[in-house]
Amino acid sequence: MTLTDAQELKIGLMAEGLTLGSEAAAWLDEVTGGKSLTSADYASTSGLILELDGVWVNAPIHAQNPNFVGVETEYHLERVDDELVVSGRGRSAIARYWPQPAYHGTANQYGPLNNFVFTHADRVRLSPIRGCAMTCDFCNIPFDDPLEVYTLKSIEGSVEAIRVALEDPEQPAHHVLISGGTPKPKDADFHRELYRRVLSAFPEVAVDIMMVPLPGVLDLPELVAHGVAELSINLEVYSRERAREVARHKFNQGLPFYLDFIEEAAGILGPGRVRSMLLVGLEPPEDTLAGVAAIAERGGVPVLSPFRPDPVTPLRATPPPSASVLREVFLAAREIAHAHGIPLGPSCPPCSHNTLNFAEDLEGCRGHAHGEPRMRG
Image (cartoon, rainbow, N blue to C red; front, side, top):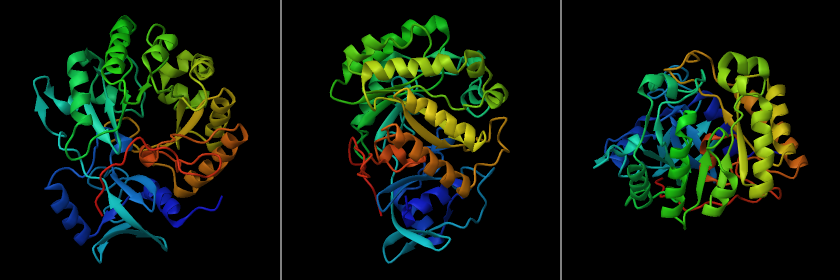
């Protein structure tokens, strides 16, 4: 595969970050009305969402990620002849910018809406709980919200927050991801009820669920009956040695706990509807690629997420992978996945903004977007 300038720029931006030129910064300030430039609710969404000639990227900036993005990088966003242009290392591409929805930073009768939902590109992400029953050193949730503040959020508030995001006047979401922290075993029934309520409330909207396959939480026949679109069962780290260091709970659960469920779910939901994310840069590339093969062999869709150190986590000083490592892993992973008749995920182009893929199918065609985000450029 020969990468285009836009694709090479995406890889470079994910590795090194973006510098805003003065005219581009002034234009962005005018477009946003001085509001935040990003939906920075966790590390992998901490950058500007841009589209470069059809390639979606989440480009980190120094203001949000000073722990790994310098004040000046090799990649610049400039305003040239009334167009946004990203350039760096001899490559350039016309860019369009994704502005924030109107509801970000607002509240309703259930409290701040961002306590429930954040929109990224064409998808709204719902977090049903505060905190997490697991601790992974690369994830901000247990460090922002330690176990003692673990709470369940209102199901009614969750449904209403999704509705607000879908109906946003400036940047409406077009599909839903239910994600967030892992629940305690005693709260399995709460999660199943929340899944039922959300799927029932929005039958015409694609709703995905990202969750650890804990007993009693993900009832596959029930979810299929209620119309779930896709599941994400994330391995994150494939190396057993590295998992022991940075994801002790997942290490203790073991690989079969995840891989067996991925295979079962793929058999029930069908092709392309069960994916699993691996973090690129937290383990040797050969371990990540072994994980890609393990997921694809079981009918799952591998998703590659470049590791991005969150400032509140123990891995805050761990550098992200270089562009050369990202390129190497992407090309090898794509070949492995295609050998099993599976593309790298996700298939939605806007949702690929923070993943190492370009939302293509096996014939090289564009993936399927759920809706058209409102872009400025």
